[in-house]
Length: 391
Image (cartoon, rainbow, N blue to C red; front, side, top):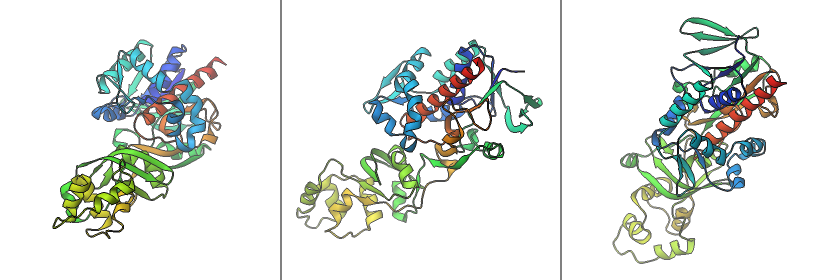
């Protein structure tokens, strides 16, 4: 009989396993996929953004409605602790101009290899291709390469992810199993996803183009960054930062010239343009690049009212068909309700079973907030399970 079971070998699960192992417990990590940290490796392909270096109040604000409940976890294992943790794994970090923190190697694979090595040194046993099938009485049942396995641990941490990128292991299959055991689960919804747009034909030549230095506004959510025009719509960090508000019904507007006050835009457009087309006038008078001009013509029409043009450049309404489906999202909103867990992240309906990571009902944008939140909840669940075992 194993003392402690962790299901899911993503950042939250591995962090919980580390805390438990350091507390002196024998830990088995069961992972349904052939290897650990597959989503972490995917996220690190373009540079692993570990966390964000900024004032704590500002950092906490990116957790939206869950900021208050996430606060003690982020105070215990927040941006500073994430950086110290990476350094202790031999991965020096650097802070970019925007405050984002990356390992110097940029990739996730060196950090993950070092982490798995450290866990093995602590006695953590990793079982891959162990796919959880729910409970049978009080036993956790797994489909394994050697047949069905049943474990009855003294404590368990569930870190199964949400339902985004299911090919990497997060399928949401756990939802009905927890509901059947009396656990309240909010519906899973996409987070950090693109917005679908039914483009007109002329936009095809702009697919793949980045749109840089734009201020995005959706209700009370604001972001300044960039995104990409894709065949399916709009995606990228700037979109993700305001995605929750847009998904929940707030209209999205783009300020294509965030450094220009409205009066300056009006003055520039008032200059005589002679025989120049509107496109050339926008390019010369405002230095508006091709991607921004294309978006203006797409959402305002090819012949916008000159009187409305300055306002449209400063607040261009975006027509879209809603978020990309959950399977295409980077992360998941919804999940185990906060009322269903105690301060240690133990399920009230299932004493001895803890929850961490995206299974919980919180969300945060990319840019270091999402990964830090997963690590922080994993830290808290591991500490909570260890405390229960001590008691």
